[in-house]
Each structure stands twice: as structure tokens, then as C-alpha cells.
Length: 259
View 1 (tube, one colour):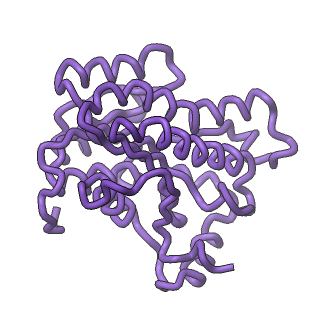
View 2 (cartoon, rainbow, N blue to C red):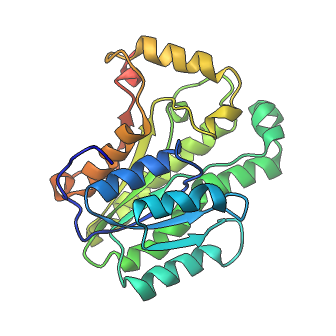
């Protein structure tokens, strides 16, 4: 960890869900939080993912680790029960998971099955609502919640298909949660990174062309990386951003403003 930043999150407790490997956006968030002084709880999806994630939890000095597949009954509750028992509180939550069955993602929205649409919505959107419900009682002095979206939530992106409506629902959920949780001092943010070379993105057709176009159109003239996203979330989790909530924050070099 070579970047030197002030420990502005010192003493804060952060749960990061969605690390698959060192290229994951969630890993960038966890790394930024740790560099800023936060204590970490990190989950992995299943036994197949564990060997890839566990070394990263060691590297980051995560205090709590656990399996978490939000589609498996009871696992989500078990994670929050453990946080409650071990820490008694939570300050930061990152939801960086998304899924759609491959056949439904590849076939276009018209051909998406009802079952595939429901699965994508449950894992990619409603699981964040469920996490927020469990996290809120632990955020006794307020806190910050983050959900990862994408530009395709608001504009049509070729081959993004069913994930477009799903991410649009996620952004709307963030706004409504920000409204409902605001009186408790809990801020909710939808984060919309520019295209990144993550494992999830590899499933999109012609993704390399999307990367090239994003770099060309961005006013800053370059792609963002996972640490850009992580540091943005770290800032939003500090008291410096205590009056910021409910909006979609773009971390894309300005590409979203260009037609």
C-alpha cells in the first residue's frame, strides 16, 4: 500500500460485499477504506471464490470474514449477526454484487425470461434493500451505504440488456432509502463508475470497444480504475460529505456528460 492518505476513517467499521479478486471494484473500496484507517469485514461468495478472496482479506487486515451468497437463505442475516456480536455497530456498507443468468443477459431484454429478470433484480437490487434493513440498526450514530450502478441505468448501452432496468431500479432504491434513512443520519449513495476491466464486465459483448470509446469521450481523457472508485466512496463516508446523500455519483472522468 503505497498511497499515503490521512486516516480520516479511523475507528470506523466497514462491511464490503462483492470482492471476487484484486480487480474488483469492491476490492478498490476495501483498500481505500483500509488506507483511510477503517476496520474491515469482507465476504466471499462461496467455496470456489474463497481461495481468491481470502489472501486479499489477509493483505487488508480484515477483522471479520465470512461467506455470503445473498440467494442462500440465512447467510445475509448470519453476517450481520456476527458484525453485531463482534463490533456492535457498523459505519459503512458497500454492496457491489450483480448477477443475471447468462442466457437472459445475452439474449436482449425482449427475450429475457421472467425467472431471469426476477433473479437479476433480487441479487442485483433487492439484496441491497435487505442489507440496508439489517445494517440500519447497527448504524447507531449514522453511516454511509453504497451500491454500485452503471451508466446503462440511464442511457441505453449496447449489450447491457436486462442489467439496464435492474440498475435503474437500484438507483431508485438508493434514493428512496436515502429518504427513509436520512432522519437516522444514514446516507445512501449510488456510485456509477465508468467501464472497468472487472470479471463481471467480461461477460458483456464487445466490452473492449466500450472501454476504448469511454476513454476517447471522457473530458479527462482516460479511464478510471478501482481505486478512483474506492477513494470516492472513502470521501463520501467521511464527515466532509455529511450533507451529501441520495444522488448517483459518477466516477468516470466526466464521460457521462458527453453526448
